[in-house]
Length: 342
Image (tube, rainbow, N blue to C red):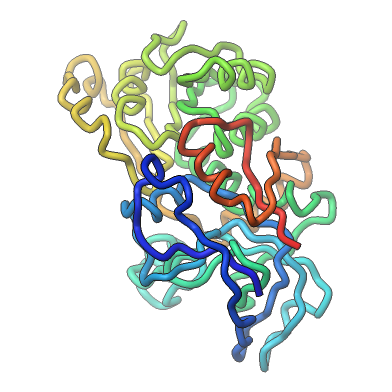
């Protein structure tokens, strides 16, 4: 099979070709697993974190990618959840132990044995992938393959972030950054919290324009003050400046939810500008998001199909994965980027 692999950790700013195309054997399906022939795989900022070493792969070389859509073409012994020919999806969550205190409490995203697709095990920047059937998901027919791919991470992590924000209908919400996850959160809010106004903070005018077109009542630069104090803010950026600025815009007892696996170090000195009275006082809260659970993905796919939520998508062939990643690094984003894989 064809695959785009990462051989070495590198800076995408200095190396715009971090992945190389190779031929590899098709994975052998094990007991309880399914084999997917991949048709689409979303491109996520977490791949940049992997390539640049902020959350490095368990071993190199590695096949990245964790927003996978494909057709079941093989069944391991005992696998009964899917039939050959079914469409299925795979997200970031690939394995948990199932018996620790977190798994038993419905918080498998915090499991110490958590394994991630495309980081700890091979992912979707390839033509085939194998996975335990209980960590694969049925995909609603309403979505095309490229529409469905971003729902498995950008959508599901956005859904989890919104739940952690403790937002009530009519309360105001801020979004920092407006890429794959944030534009899906905004679509979700418009349906689930119809009286809530959404305020977007983004670095580039094209992102701000896209936010207003998607339904934001206001869109300004990262450093601007919102027209009113906000009950909650969800940060979807890889930087520290938006975190500090978001705290400034929170109302008393407001909550900031940081939706990121890792933060880049390029602007970490911005944290020195934290002022207790201005940014934290009056019982403001900060909540991080760690991974997703299978329940997050399952619930969000059902809800997204009911609404329906259709992501804005930019498509690339697998051979142009490096271009998609470079554009993502440079902030050239209009919704979600997805690799089409033949």
